[in-house]
Amino acid sequence: MAASDVKEGKPLTSMADVITPNAQGLRPSDIVKPEDPSTWELAWIKGVTPWDFKEPQLSLKEAIESSGLVFPSTGNALVPGCGGGYDIPYLANTLGWDTLGLEIADTAIKIAEEIIEKEKEKNPKFLGRISKQDFFTLNPPDSQHFDLIYDHTFFVAIPPSLRPEWAKQMAKLVKPGGYLITVLFPLVPDFVKAGPPYHAKPEHYTELLSGDFEKVVEKVPEKSSPSHVGQEVLMIWRRKVAL
Ligand SMILES: C[S@@+](CC[C@H](N)C(=O)[O-])C[C@H]1O[C@@H](n2cnc3c(N)ncnc32)[C@H](O)[C@@H]1O
Image (cartoon, rainbow, N blue to C red; front, top):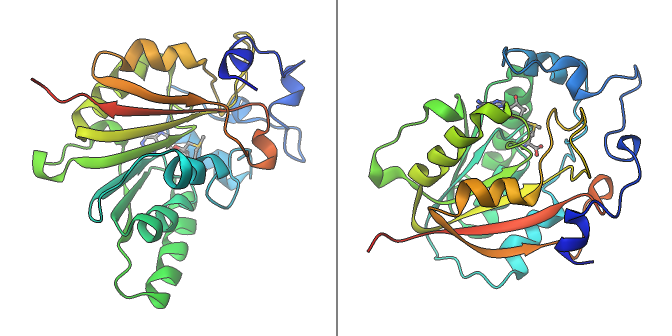
């Protein structure tokens, strides 16, 4: 399937296909309120976390292992809004890089901390870590900017009014020549109340990122995690190098 097919929303018939409510009939948009980021913790406590695959997404594995990108032997990666943090060991172990996850919800942080601790027991040189911090306030010195940032459903977690700020932060935090991997999920045909808790279309990323990034990949992944089949688009962006 081409990305243009999913852009038109062809694989989907209704919102019920996209976000399955939890046992109590709740969806993220019932709980998470954009004006109050502390409501993310409620979503975690109530188990309204349909994005939570409990493993790295297959689309991330495809981006790292078979998209044709060549990664250096040392580097650092950032996973903003990392949830349970499953991507932290994946990136730290696969790339051998220092990998930082950012989260604001305590329940998610606890899950990620346990995962990181287990990894450290297996490998004392493990380079993954998590920090309780708002992505929008992250302001490291230039020398600590990132070779790679991975965004899976963080873009659709923030209020759409913050998307320009999201793009500004990404452009600041990704080193020139570094990569931003965005996995768009859920892909829906129209603007309806959905998502974790919002939703987006590929062009929303392009509009915001094309000034500072070159898009090097836009595709429907070869394999998707079961909850994501036909509803995600993988996009990889290279930070432009100033002339
Ligand atoms: C839709 S979930 C995605 C979690 C994770 N990326 C995954 O794929 O499993 C979004 C996460 O971002 C966190 N979050 C929301 N706003 C944030 C912010 N400003 N800074 C850091 N984390 C944030 C929420 O607590 C939530 O766990």
